[in-house]
Amino acid sequence: MASLARADRFVCADLQDDDGRIGMASTAPIGIFDSGLGGLSVVREIRKDLPHERIEYFGDSANAPYGTRPPEEVRRFAFAIVDRFVARGVKAVVIACNTATSAAVNELRAAYDIPIIGMEPALKVACDRGGGTSQRVIVAATPLTLREHKFAALMNRFDRDNVILRQPCPDLVEIVEGGRLGDHDLVMRTLHRYFDDYDLSTVDSVVLGCTHFVFFRRHFRELLDPRTAIIDGNEGTARHLGEVLAERDELAPDDQSGSVNVGNSDRSPAVAALSRSLLEESDEGEAVGTNDSIH
Image (cartoon, rainbow, N blue to C red; front, side, top):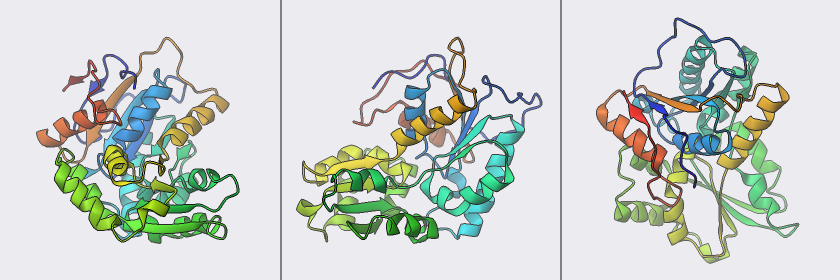
């Protein structure tokens, strides 16, 4: 994976209103938010695809996890975050959270006149891999994502010709948020607890339906049969964002220096350090050097 853009600004603080609101233009930032730290995996993909963009990221770790909360509460959190993004003059918002997308994307799109890019489990990608042959797919996600109407509608498009298995994995979110991703034994015990009841030799794909779960890709690879695909929606989300901005003639100019400004509702030094570590880590778990400064 290529190194992130140089001189990224890294902040862990509340998302504050900006006195000087930036006009809606190609140089305006993109707002990206998640229930916590999982959305940093989406930021990495967007930085790779759109290196000239300025990114305002907000992780709501103080209220994580969203996946076990009522939908109404998740919608309230989402609106509070997007209100602040809009006040800062963002040109688009990416909901880097499958749970928040399920709970709030339609309401957010109705309330704001900027693009709101949501995420959903990449079930279509998994099923299309069969080229017409029935696929056996496990969708790993949060409990709220899997029980919301949005996922039910998505599943109904594919479950006639494929076997779709839903697996809630709430403890994986807690492992990331708790900074225990490096505890290999804990991670593998947790994965075995969730997946040992399946005959994994028969599974064609596992869909990572939560942005936190992307950080476990190498652990899933260890768990699964070598022929089983591991699929997430980050690449498709970054590509779709680029297409939307191009259609609106709002892609950042090539002479603009890309940046990442990271905020979090949990202002502890531990969360700041963990955020930076996750932003710099490759999908294979290796560190990727950057020249970010921490304020």
